[in-house]
Image (cartoon, rainbow, N blue to C red):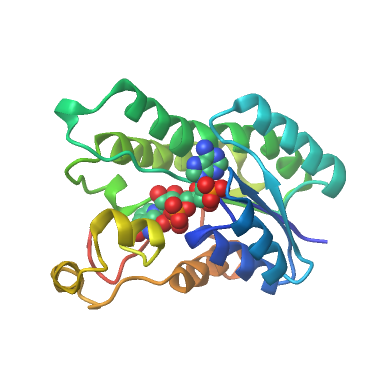
Length: 244
Ligand code: NDP
């Protein structure tokens, strides 16, 4: 049995990642914070291969309890995807400490605690991989996202440090999505408005938003032996929006 853990695995990009891993034959544990309806729908779509477990990534003790349960019930995961993330966008001059803390706790400390809890078993089992879902805004700043960009930049450096320390047992890579068509992004950028959407698409050489399936394709590459010699890297999947 190949076991995968996906944080934020029942909504948006994470849901597509859970479903792809399930289609590859993995037993998937999809962690979610509170959206029980999405959790139920994802389990159903996984046709018996996806189990949703509630776990708030801003609560380290909860993470450790859930991870102990996972390793006891399923053994060492072969794949951990640190996907869960939040945005609390706003100008830096009015950004509150709470905006900062919530984003850093979820987007950077969450992956630390989850990796720290599961990596010992993964190292022991060997042949495992961690994929951290960062963002192109980890390497290119944007306005109103000091907390988000800093957290995602930290996640890239965490990726490289873990790639060094967990080698050769666990490969650790970062996937950097560009604009990807999820409810969260549509709402935050007002992409329901055709004019706004056209403006955004005008900046993307591929002339379309990324799909959650595009991200699942990239994940599939990162977790299979086809990328067996790849670790500590950042894979940008953004239709050419940002060419580093
Ligand atoms: P969504 O808002 O659709 O999904 C976010 C997921 O994270 C949800 O499943 C949510 O769980 C989970 N989550 C949020 N806070 C917590 C928490 N405290 N504890 C546990 N889980 C939590 O986002 P997307 O699918 O759009 O994004 C997924 C990842 O990709 C994020 O890391 C995001 O930063 C990154 N990304 C997305 C881009 C895009 O354009 N969509 C671009 C670049 C990066 P629940 O549903 O239970 O609330």
